[in-house]
Length: 438
Ligand code: DLL
Image (tube, rainbow, N blue to C red; front, side, top):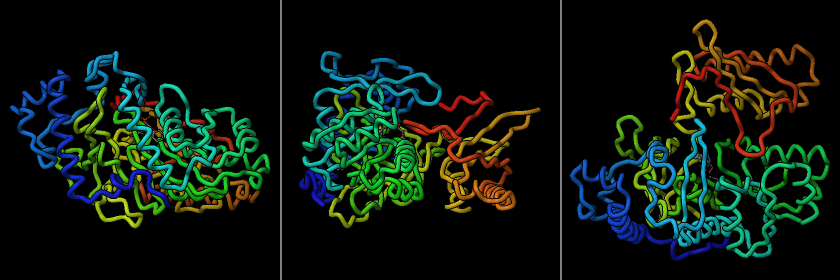
């Protein structure tokens, strides 16, 4: 497959390190000058920009946190005058209080270039018709994907999310060859394509999905339903949006655009920097961002990174699929539970009997946490006799208990009864209301 910017994407490690060091020194100096919070944190540690001589000094620098964005809302962390800010995006997170991020023209150009790297790497070109079904608006998905697709000269079909039947009609009539949306929405589109019986008329070749955790099993299901090859893309509003990292054709992790972002993995408790391959919290430093730079931003995403050479020829480090954020973690009857563990347990049961659609319901009765997992049956199981259904229910219950160490009430639901998402799936309904995750 083609490489969009070979000079950068295949740069030898020593050169990447040199480039990162030069950029880091400039970024730290600039931020010390322009961002009061960063200056204060450096001063607290007795650090001056001249103490930072290269990437080897990264771990001396202070962390930044989502709460910094909230506390300095809306423009307190911007490093350029607003007259230079050409676009704003926002994200609400789980507590609903939004954060805002800004981009200069150079930032927007960098962003489009990152998404263009991914698109080129999966074989997309000016001859493609790319349907962008991520939401357009303050969410970075829609416009981020749009600008990248436009950058490679493809024909962009900006449907945004929602209006599922019309999405499919558009896909068929306009001859979409690529689809960009959340994996949950891709599943939903796939189910609707099946219902409409039009799978064989689709011209889709590839799909680029991200913005939420998704499993390999879900990838296969989407590929099967839409007859495509499905790729993963990662990003977050605070750092840029989609394209911070992306899968190449080898699909062995996502290459981080290392000329713009330095990833680190830390132990979320001790904050110690961990070695490649060790799992921990992902932290990003932006090297060239002008309007909204961040140093050592704690993403709360849990994953590991890998510097081994990739078969595709790219040298940029790869991160594995984040399996959720540390703030997605639920504490149920004193036990730590990640939604992704539940998904994994469900997948171990039986692929063809249950669908990957599930919802976790947590509540509190008489001072004790209640924990239920609603799982959709496949059409096949639904049509089966009651004994088979009970058997699967028991299997799920025991699988959950052995994976999580606590019991859950499992409710097998009718096919298609759990609400479908047009954006990120809502996997957890927690009515306890005592936990402020952020
Ligand atoms: O979700 C940006 C984006 C849009 C990425 C479109 C990819 C595609 P936020 O709304 O700020 O930004 O949410 C960022 O979503 O910290 C992760 O927890 C999660 N996330 C994003 N991509 C992936 C992925 C966008 N590929 C948060 N796999 C991040 C797993 C992901 N989780």
